[in-house]
Amino acid sequence: MSISDKQKYASIATQKRDGSWVWTPVWFASANETYYVFSAGSAGKVKRLRNFQSIQVAPCTVSGKITGESFTAKGWLENDEKKIRRAYRALRSKYGWQMHLLDFFSKLSGNYQKRQWIGFSFTENGAGSA
Image (cartoon, rainbow, N blue to C red; front, side, top):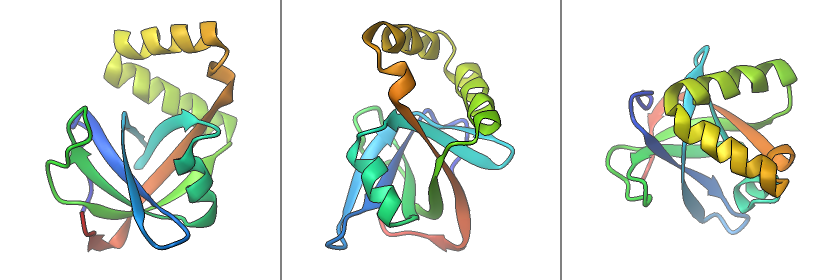
């Protein structure tokens, strides 16, 4: 009832106020049974997650094409520094040089400190509706 950490990309769906879902492909990594992604702090998914904690998660391609079953999860905006450091370690371990390169250019552009971390864990009620 989850997504494999071996999967390179996941698509997360956050809910809009009108009830529709917006899917976004992301890098993700797990740390202590919690999954983490990051985003620009001003991104739509961050704003939507403030309103609705229920999300959908599915494996996908780099372009966002869903490749498997979706699962219901509970998402939140992570602000705990210790957990954020753990999330960075997990992502750097999983994506290696790609994550280091992304971090480098994010620091150059001034966007590194503007990141918002998102944590999620899968709920008991199972499959979603991708």
